[in-house]
Length: 257
Image 1: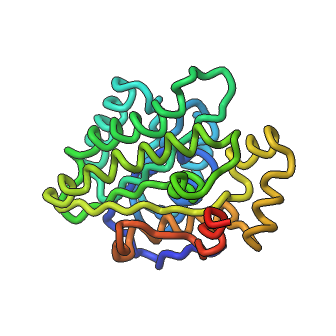
Image 2: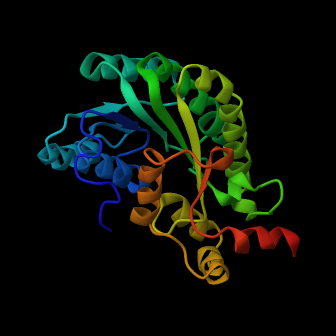
């Protein structure tokens, strides 16, 4: 997909995307870099992949910083933002993209720790770097955003509940952010083809993604959804601070069946 942002649209801007060594995060940070922004690629344990992405983005002329950080660890998050402060002096865009909860070998509370607690941890650490006019973008799914009215697959329920808890906790900070002149927007979309979450769901519940695709008519792919996330960082904040990707009518109809 072509970049939805105009050339040089973000020249002079600085953006950090959590979980950006692959998938939606990688495509989002690529769109930012191609539009002229200085970018921070954040990863948890895929250093080589993050560096490969950074090497490619450097050709666009902006500064590229690669920062490994475990978002569930305060010291790790603090170290990342200290490096960002030293290298860039601040941030204009923070995209809270990293999420999870279906990985094997994690504690029972891992989904909540990552999808709620860590989102607040990252926001708090970023606040000193976010000047008036900056924007925070939180990436979620319809399955999480509408979890109170539309049932989801049992395998995804812990993730959906924890991501909704994270969204609620972040929304509670909107008045504080507004006082600082910082805008906040949620980007919500249906299941995305090609993501690690979709892969894990399909593994746990074979045919689940195909069924959702058939019901919806189509599902966005990674680059298409990332384009919406990138646009959410620059376009006017929509009503209720929420940018819906695609038509949600069919999705909401499931809760009325």
